[in-house]
Length: 115
Length: 112
Image 1 (tube, each protein chain N blue to C red):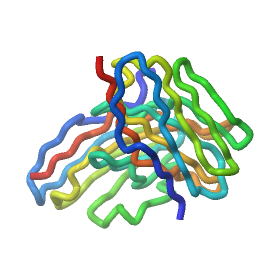
Image 2 (cartoon, rainbow over the protein chains, first blue to last red):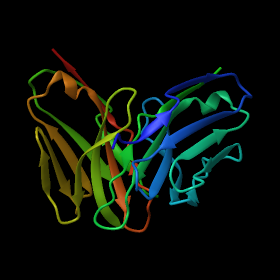
Image 3 (cartoon, rainbow over the protein chains, first blue to last red):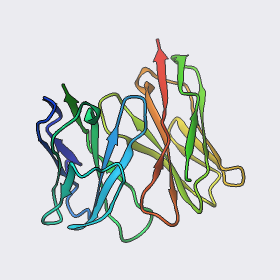
């Protein structure tokens, strides 16, 4: 078990381009979360999945953002028509829900810079 | 509105010294409170988790306290090391939501 992995680790793009990030959770974890974190702030919730179902989306998640978890394993987060305000660290976390207190395990994040 | 406030915003201490970080929350109903350590450019890593009935929990040189009546928590770091330099984030989960509420974190710098 190598923990939660995210790719790419860094992404530089020009305003208006589309970007896609991938998150591979810890195997057998049934819940997966996406967060956004800007400098000096705590993570802000974006969305989460229970298996392949997307159960909740934050109002921060504009229509330019879409997330999928097609087979209940890895997940992708796509940002269309990127804006400079999208520059942030995008964190993924996974957890196993079913008994005891839920612990979210975070990946290293994808740092996005929109020029 | 659920909120988590942390203080101080940043802290600089000398290696070997102790320090205490504070967390106040207004999350209701309360389920649990967790302290995370986040190294620069990395994801947060859980240090401790406390439920309503727990007052103190230790993890090595880290000791967390919880006062559920005043809705306050603290994280005490003993005999600080250079590797303790990081952001420490307080996270509170409500009993009615799967979405935790994160504080902004306290940035700790330990100088040799």
